[in-house]
Length: 212
View (cartoon, one colour):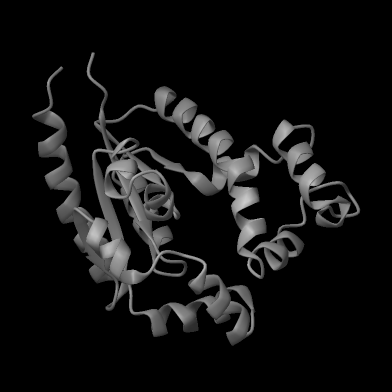
């Protein structure tokens, strides 16, 4: 049997991906989120957590032995080499976890929500690298100044921290270049949800036309 249609959902931080994910879920489409997998692979007792501590030290753990994401983020966003080391440890584990979840999901097509889809593709052959994982790339797009304001408000970080986080991601231009489909999130939540509904109908058609 042919693999079901897989849509890679991506976008810059604070661009509105969560709203898009929620709407797809309401429409009955399974959403496999890389953030869920990233938490699962560094849970206590998992090899991923042991590997992270081995590389970055016990300072990235809380008093309870969980991963201190804020402490780890402060390390990697100030040092690109350390960020690449972390990605080398976690990305294969996250990908395997997502593939396992996708294989167990039921639906006419699947959304794989991967914030770093374009970044990962750039390191493995650009657009073709991302294509190894998904059939189409859906980008949620927002003006970078709007992202900055949302990020500062949502995560209670300084403008300097927010800018560093944005700088560590692929550029807006790179994401748009990689996109097959674009959801512009410059309006209201209602407008964004309506745009998802239109894409959903298109994806159902594409899913139905795939060879069985």
